[in-house]
Image (cartoon, rainbow, N blue to C red; front, side, top):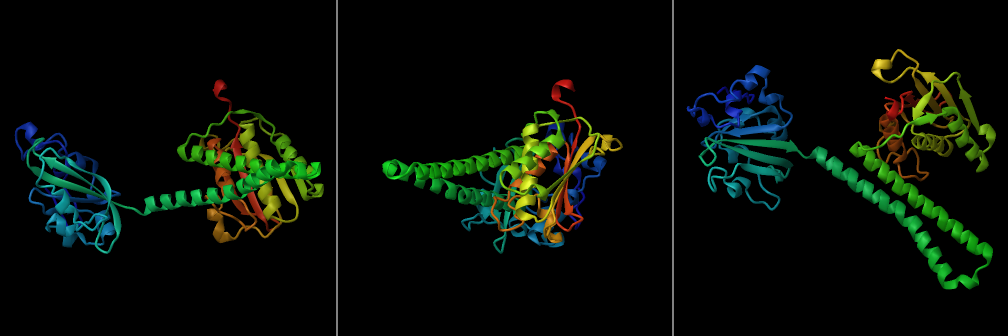
Length: 391
């Protein structure tokens, strides 16, 4: 066995196969030499590793364990496990006294991962494995894994923020729907047809808002789990952008606010038309709502974002820019994260996160920068690709 102050431990000491199966308890087993052959060192492991011998004294304390516990390896090596790693559960009970790895039932082989506390109250994720000379024999090694909880806490905070955002966004339209429907049911005869129509239009608009929010949540779930389906069909990107512009003009936006440039010829694009519309809708809505001046949309052929096709014009590029104040430089790396909002003009802050997920599900890429006129500029590229049944 080789142990240094850095926590280097021979591979033979870490193998889980009982050496006694091969006749000699001290002899090499099937795993002997494995770490040496691959150059594995405990300090190379991403998680904290603490190993105690058959007497309960620490013989390995790797670099990650030092970082997580703030205890130098030189101070921990040779100490009893409960002194080198004085863990407590969330109720303040000493962990090693509770689990008693060197005593108790001989059929135990470890402890599942759980949250424990280091001195000072710092929370860590701890799991343990008990290595025995044979299944019910005395313990030869106790191997402890330590993980920092910060990444898990960030995930939990993100989930909490998502729940809070959804609850807030649902409350307003549902209150409106409930109020108007209850009023109409109770006092139907007292209202004129115009008043009834106005209230029903409001209910319809709020119901659409709830539907959109639920659709966003479903998209986020599929993106996070890698289950976002792309149903590829021929897509005319120029025509798709034109439809969105016409819809804004019909809704009251001045026609001269939009400038559409289409470079011909464009490669034949196979993509999911509904999801392409979702991307265009989000980007144009951001430009109209948060930007100023002329909204310029450029559709061109481009080099594919895929490495194997990077020297060919096999992608369609769409750039949406405006002439507003733009996005601060320090915020550009957060634009495509959940809940990012460029202003206080409403919205859930989920749109651009979904846009990025959709584009990447197509094998494309999306970037954000500053437009020539000073506003925000979003550019996404979709590789030409082919439908699944032609591949």
